[in-house]
Length: 413
Image 1 (cartoon, rainbow, N blue to C red):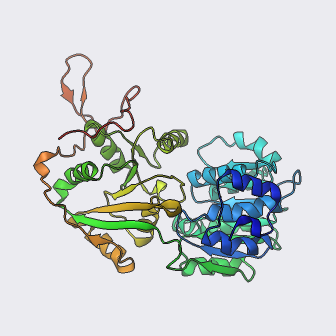
Image 2 (cartoon, rainbow, N blue to C red; image 1 turned 90 degrees about the vertical axis):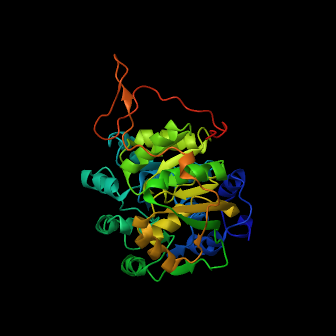
C-alpha cells in the first residue's frame, strides 16, 4: 500500500515524499489507518521496520498550532528521544508543528522556552516527571500519548514513572504503544491504560531482518585476537562491536586504536554532548567501527551498518535481537557474529533457546600468534624520561586524538 491511499494531510505527504518513502512497511500499513481514526493501538515489529513514522504521522496530523502541548512521546533513552524528534521535525516541515525534546543530561532551563511553544513533547520518563513537578509542563490538553520501545522502558524500571505521567493526562486520550517484543508485562500495561486497543503483530514471514547469524567458540585469552582476525576477514564497511560493560567498551576501543583500527566507544558513562558527537560522526562515515554497550542497541536509526560483532554475549535473547537489529535495516542484508568464550555459554544457551537462527561457525586457519593480545591497561609515556608507566584503570587520552581516515586499508599483520 502507498501513503497516498490513506487519509493523510497533503502537507505531510509532501514531507514523506521528500524523505524518499514510497510504499508503506507492514507496521505502517497496519497501524496508520487505525491510528488516524483515533483508536488505541499496540504495534509490534522488528527494529528498523518504520515504527517511528507509523506514530509520527498521526501525531502531526492530530495537533493544532498554538493550542499548547497536545501529544507526548515517552522514550527509554536520550538517543531515541532525539531521533524521534528529528523524524517528527522532518515530517512536519511543511505543517510547522512545534516539537521539543526533554531529557536528562541537558540543563533543564534550556528546555523551558521550547515547552512554552511546543505542541508535541518527546522525552524520557525521568525528565518529563521533573517538568511536571516544577509546573513547567502541562499535560491536561494531551490528546495523544505514545509509549515507544515499551519493552525497554519496562526493563529499565520506568513502569512507576510512566504510571505517574499518565495520571496527568486526560482519560479520553488516544494511546499508542510500540515495542519490538510483546511479553505479558506489555499486555498488562495495555490493559491498565488503553481502551480496547487494536493489536498488530508482525508475521514471521514479513520484515524479518535478513541477517546471517553465527557464533565462533574461542578461548578467553584468544578473544581479542579472534576479533582482529574477524575484522581482517570480513573487512566491514561499517560495524558495531557490542560489549556488556562500559569499562570493556573503553578498553576495546583503545586496543583497537593501538592496532591502527579507527574505533570509538559510546556508553552511558559519557556526557550526552560527547555521545551525540560520536554518533553523528559515525553516521557520516568518519570512522568505520563503533564499540558500544546496549545504550546503542535499541531504537537508534543507523543506516548502512554491515556487521554486528558481539564481543560479549548479551544476558538475554531480547538484548541480542535488539543488537543485531542495528544491521539489515530497511530491507538490506547484514552479518552478526558472536565471539563465544566459556563464560558466555549460559547466555548463549538462553539466546539459542528462543532463536534458532544462530549457527556455529569454524574459523579456518585462525592462528592467535599472528595477532597481538589485549592490554587491560593502556600505557602512557612520562613527560620527561619517556619511560612507560601504568596508572590505575584505563587512562584517558589527553588532547585531541588523531583519527585514521575512513576507508584506510586494514593493517597488515
